[in-house]
Length: 228
Image (cartoon, rainbow, N blue to C red; front, top):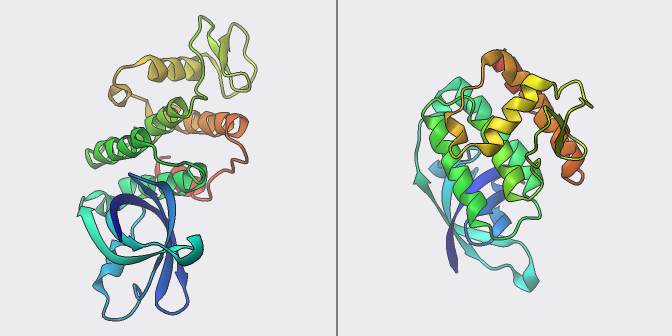
């Protein structure tokens, strides 16, 4: 039996009472677990099934390298982000996002710590934190833009130049990218409300260029509506 902490990224109900969980764990990276009986009437732990909830999983290895079964599930840290409608919307969006881009990620303590840091920032009502997290993930995965002297970020090449190549990467947006990429503490950077939609859209464009098979998360529309 193995016990480890992980963030719940998504889950699917399986049959009447069971579920399949997708998680990003501290020691093994992205994992899929089978959880028996979570939807039974007497099981009070179904309330734990919240996106990006930090949980401790005790798991039994599957036979013939099959899916691992959770034998015990406990909450590691309770927080209030799920009671704040803006924070809750951000959580769902980021869980949706990470569930896609971390599918092939093995153990990565930096990413695990970065998700922890993001959740703390969001709990402090930093509603810009998801934008910062997405830039941080690009840096960790080695595909972030290279800093240069130009005023315009070219999303395809990941370099700054003196000529704009994409309407979303104007001087203002490109400067914001530069500030975040070069900052020691990017969570302190103020991103005006009027710029957040365009900046998020530019992040998605960049991910499409640099992350294989990337698809725009279904929850994008909801997060854009809540921050309009």
